[in-house]
Amino acid sequence: MQEVAQCFNQTPPVFDPSKSSTYSTVPWDAPTCYQAGGYACHIDEEDCCYRISYGSGSTSTEGTISIDAFAFEDNRQNMVDVCHLVFGCSDYTTGTFKGYEVGIVGLNQDSLSLVS
Image (cartoon, rainbow, N blue to C red):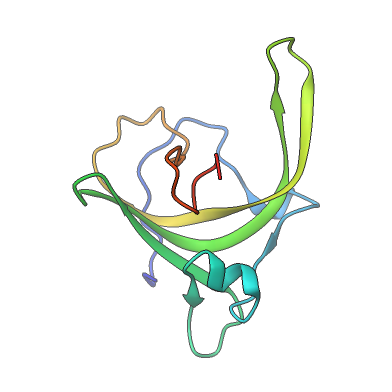
């Protein structure tokens, strides 16, 4: 993973893990890290990191594999709690972004997609 954070400009609010009471990182030796294709961030750290490229490879993200509580709104505007989801908390991105995006969501049938 990159030593210096480099993310595209985003319109606030931007997710701040320190403000979530349910956020945690995935340890590099946890089965979840292996299943997500992660690796040890640094030799002396315990966190699990990831690096993924999208499309033609011109867009990529790197960061820490994390877990947090998520809820989505259904078609009746009810919040549906899906408990804890594994996701990548990015701190290094490349690609063309316009600034109003707040992240990348995989929706294919890959094992790392939100659908799976």
